[in-house]
Length: 119
Image (tube, rainbow, N blue to C red; front, side, top):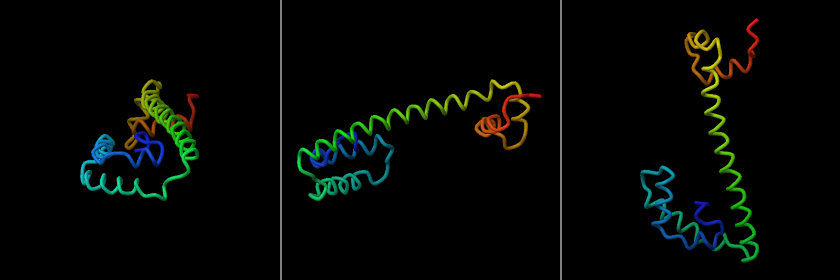
């Protein structure tokens, strides 16, 4: 929702169909139209608004924070891929994963805790 409109004034102008489309893109499947209606009503409440200059400044701050959040989400995804791939390259991977209950994520944690000094 925040990516659609960074200020309360912009959010108040969102159509119900645009809100519903954003909800569907985010993975909502049930009750989307009713939820979109309730969100639209909430976004049009006057108490959300600030003086125009303040609202614009806060909108720019929200835009910047959302960009940082997007970048961090990408970094977390990349780190997750590396963590998932790295244990399989360890020389003792086959031995460690032969123990019941030791999946790849736990193997990565185990190797991080015990280190890689085989002696």
